[in-house]
Image (cartoon, rainbow, N blue to C red):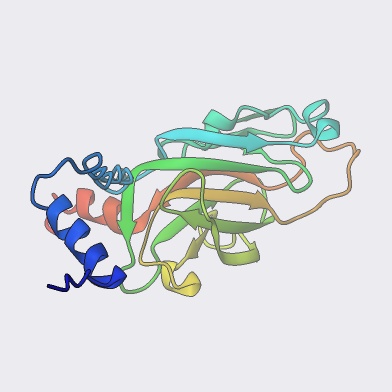
Length: 209
């Protein structure tokens, strides 16, 4: 009697089949790791005004000459006052190209009309404003070197101008670019406050808006 051996292909299939039926087998497959959710910076409700400074920078030549270098003066409601040039209060002078980034405490949403108001004291120095939903950015430009202080010491910006649906962090940068060094005691834009317009309006209206 002639015994026929199975072909190599059939033999391989038998080995794979038997191995899958509990016959020894290799190590169990490694489970796919579950990615850690990215933290959301938009969970908390926003405040009407900047609550914290997350970053700031002033050129050294202005830091050594300006009298108004405290970035925390850009927080809270507008309160600038006093008599210049040596006795102002309530704002931070940014110097040539300096900036301050404030945290609104939560994300504001793009609403009809303007969404942010920057209160700028002393004169009408221009500012550039950027926004982001996270402290590390990316930051989106809403307006570059916009004259600020013409209307009751403020200028306004719309999130829609940058195609941004929401934002929590606001970067205000000097747009005057007054050459440094100079003899000014308050060189650069003088930022008094950063206001979330719709949040402030809602609070003023008892939270009904």
